[in-house]
Amino acid sequence: MPEQAIKDKTAIVGIGWTAFSRNSGVTTLTLAAEASLKAIADAGLHVQDIDGVVSFYHRQPEGQMVRELVRALGLKKCNFEFYSDGGGGWNCGAVLSGAMLVHAGICKKVLVFKARNRYSQGRAARAERANDVKGDAQFTTPFGIHHAAASFGPIATAHMARYGTTTLDFAHVAVTERSHAALNKKAMMRKPITIEDHQNSRWIIYPFRLLDCCQESDGGVALVITSSERARDTKHAPVYIMSGMGGQGQTAGLWETNGANSAPLLYEGAGITAKDVSIAEIYDPFTFMCMTHIEDFGLVKKGEIGPWVTAGYNRLDGSLPVNTHGGLMSEAHIHGLNHVIEAVQQLRPEGVVDDLCNGAHTYDRTTCRQVRNPEIALVCGECGESAVLLRRA
Amino acid sequence: MADYLKPLPIADLDSQQFWTRCKAHELSAQRCGDCGKFRWPPQAFCPHCYSWKFDWTKVGETGTVTSFVVVHYVSIPAFQEDVPYVVAHITLDGTDQQITMISNVIDCSWEEVRVGMPVRVVFDDVTADVTLAKFRPA
Image 1: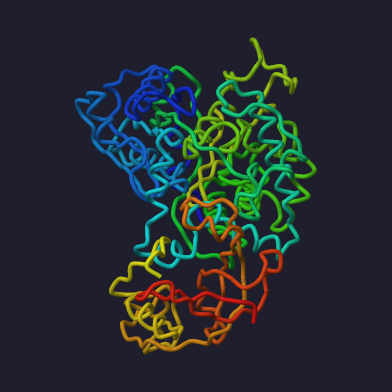
Image 2 (image 1 turned 180 degrees about the vertical axis):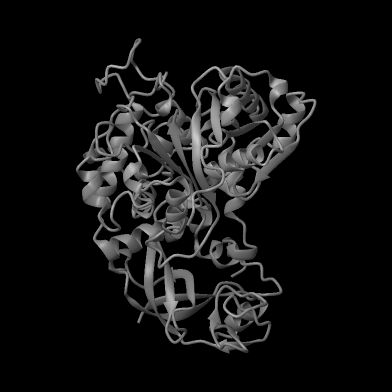
């Protein structure tokens, strides 16, 4: 498999985000606009420079629609709009879509965003969806599957049966991600938790306890993609998009996700191997899903993720820091586009701007969440249905 | 039975046969008229050889739990009476591993359910019109 034609041809040059909360008190359009205007300003661009807009949703539009934002921003000329149904699998698919639009010469500067009031308005939406009994849902809903934990739980149970992974292993992911969020000013859950807290938390849907489940959030994030050539003139050092993929496939069994299909294409497309990855921002709706994604992208041998997270290799000073912002679990659930934002922050020369450091990064883990000199970041979406490799300038 | 409050399946043109046969207490699935492979869920063409020929066939009433969850927290209040309840992936015997249905494992405590556990179908006539195929330890 050759390197992808798009390799290093495009870059992320601007990032922005709103406050993350349980009640934004504003519309998703306001959230989307705030994050977008911040990302455009961060890139040193004018709003009218944007000529492409991309976002994504899960099953039914539950976030801010693309066309409304284009209208609200008053874009005089938008060459391409794209709103995909890939859900949490599509955070990196959205980024890659923007990169492809630029690389294809259709757009010069593409805005990628996600905005949602998923905590304050999500309960009603979920209740409605819980009663869906058409199509594939006719074979699940009547039997009592109405929650993501019930849809993804079987992947964990199968992995436990096959490899001996335990719910105690899951606890280490929850605790480590929370410790990262403690160093993230915008994270919604920053109070430290212990292994005991995890093990004592109530069952939601076995094998997931309360502290295995991510939160729901209100908030928005956005980023701007342009060509690597044009990126030289923007305000911040660019973060290059090395390679990407997006789509579904079949795997050997429930214990393995589509990451196993996409990882070879992704690494070969970038001309690197899994060993070259410095940090990973991994889709983590449940602790275990983060674990299987780490394995399926070849970062840890299949079946060995339990001891690996227990040893703490995923911590900020570990061999492969994972979810340095706290992930969906502890930062916020902005459908994983917040994972891309974190990767960009980590890969910029100045590093993250919202930890507890005053001035230069100290690498003191009571205040600093910047990883030491990361070069390449892997970001992935749900079940590895999309992923990108990013590298610093 | 008039007060059954849980959501009921809405059959479509692909799945109508399955639900009709369930009501007659027969577990069934489509089998390709060309390559002979089973498939699930119901659809008009074979995902293996893309033939449009198929027959509805009675399938074996036993299977194996290939994975499961135990629901302690419900989103639909009508299910609260069943908590904790098991929802399992059940691969049916005699289908070359081609059919894995999602259903409840009933008549045992959730602590007893294991991956690899043999189960047998039990038909639950939840309303006058709808029967759900559930499973119990074999």
